[in-house]
Image 1 (cartoon, rainbow over the protein chains, first blue to last red):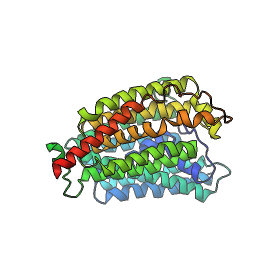
Image 2: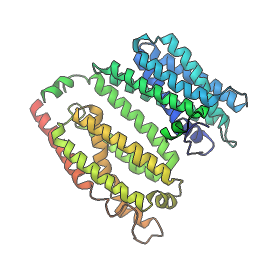
Image 3: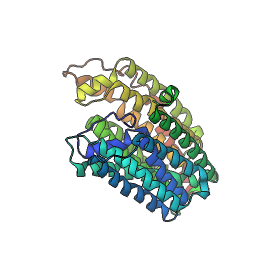
Image 4: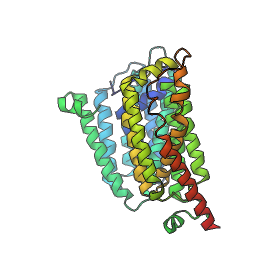
Length: 188
Length: 204
């Protein structure tokens, strides 16, 4: 599940830390949640990532307990598509809309982390690992977004970046659905 | 010069763009350093993050407020980059990833080497070249990291790695071409320091 997890890790915080960083879909979505929070600005810069991380923990717990979510791979692909679309919408994306979306997306990402927890892991340490790396990605994304907005063309660049991320989400979704052999070859 | 003074006057507080750049670099070093430690072990972190931190300190203490002119460092940066990629080619052809992984007792496969060094690395280096050209603070940091990395990291191919397999000095993948990037890198560092001194003299 979820692409290119090359490192199983030590089964503890290391494995949790690496999980969001070694899957392209996790990495892109979490980084872009940070960018989106900076794009909206104000309190959204911490509320949107906080909602994501909180719901990710809930999803992680569900995954660890064996509770099922429908179509988890598709949910993660849709999160990439969704966060790209919210970025591409620019000013029209409100903080409330971003928080609702972040809650949904976080649940699915957390579920994937929880379901792929190594058997030997301590659940708390593993969760600590993926929360820390996700927070790092959010902060890096927020700083990148704020930095981009320092330039006069920054807002337009973020909208273009959102469109590109949305297209990557479509490819991830096609792969999740097994729709197209071409989509499987489009990304490493 | 005037453009730089407009961007970040040394007598005033740092501009927003520069402060955000510092924070982003710091977050990147911590996150990437942890990831690299978990993936490749302490020795690789020592080399890569050592260069990142040394470059970060040099950047903060010298050209942070006034990124040097692209004419001063971009040619040496691009030549060093071309020689570095030639060096990566030698590493890849002669199986560097497998040899260093077994010598350092870590798991680092050829696909991971390609992913990090051949695909992800050049994205950073090319973005760095654009940043240098635009005199963006982040581009200037990438230049410091790259030049310092060549000076600190590449000699390990001659001085450390050949002793790691049984203690007898012998060929290690990447060894023949490891020192070439150091020549333009050392010139690049010298030019950045010269540029910084000239800017300081102009300020005073």
